[in-house]
Amino acid sequence: MTALLEAYTEKIKSGELRSDGAQAAIISHLDHLAQALEAREQRGAIGRLLNKNGTPKGAYIYGDVGRGKTMLMDLFFATLRVKAKQRVHFHAFMQDIHRRRQALREADVITQIAADLAKQAQVLCLDEMQISDIADAMIVGRLFQALLAHGTVIVTTSNLPPGQLYRDGLNRDLFVPAIKLMESNFDVISLASPTDYRLGRVKARESFVTPLGPKADAHVQRIWERLTDVPKGKICEIPVLGRSLRVPESAHGCARFTFADLCEAPLGPPDYLALTSHFQTLFVERIPALKTSQRNEAKRFVLLIDTIYDARLHLVASSAQPPERIYPQGGHRFEFARTVSRLQEMQSAAWWGQKIAET
Image (cartoon, rainbow, N blue to C red; front, top):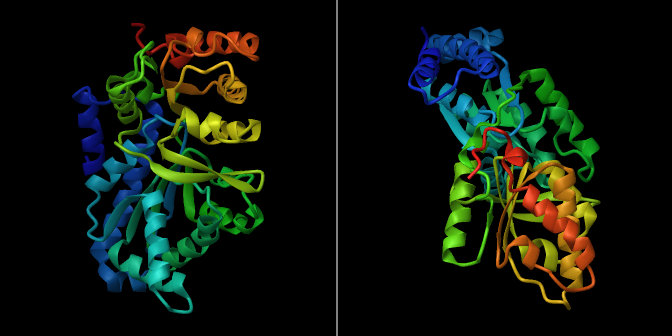
């Protein structure tokens, strides 16, 4: 039995993982890739030059959040017997590329960066690929092409298939060649597991926390870490009608905001709809008790919750008051009655999934 299959089987035997046919199919594919890469490693640099057809295709694993994409890639990376390998979150990877571009003065910067990267990584694992920035979109295709020319094999995870990356983005047509490059050079594999394993880490009725204070902040932080496996998310921007919406923290299909970020700023339905197309769970912290005069904030909050509800997203929130007491008076109080009902429904086990235990 190979190292990857042995590690995966052991996790199932120990109860750390459940048996999952969709995950097992991905492991089988990655196992064949690992064997090909290890055989290439044994041939050495001279052997690779003599056998140019010996470079296997990379892998592009996509699927809904919580299905285990990162876990499977990490198992592959940990057991892979290749010296020059690197595993990095895609956002951090692109930040490093931009930093290198600023530091280098060569005419063809991307070619030089790719040559340097290829020396460090003949296998490059990129977690959570998501293109939300025009600068990243313009670089990725050229960079991947140059890395492939150097024989680097790329394995990446994403919530979306290549064809849906950077959808509705500014000048997206310029990114289409990069999509075609990935579809031609990577085995594009869907992880279609029916189970969102992360949801089992959150119990019903702990997703809406009140009152505000250090305990509420700590509680929300614990949920964030359960759902994302990171203490702090990355800043990102998503396209909205030719402009960008800043997301203060994002990780593994989750986005984190304060009430002020979303409802005191001049945002509207296009912004909230854009969030639902990029994320599966929204964190909205520090919802205040709204005054009668805060009609605009109340209206935006109603629109936000309606949009989240219609898209069937999960909501984690902290609030000064329970839903029914956030905005008891004011110009939008009748609309707000629907918001109260929806906030209460979104705390239920049924909303989060039947695997969530009612408390």
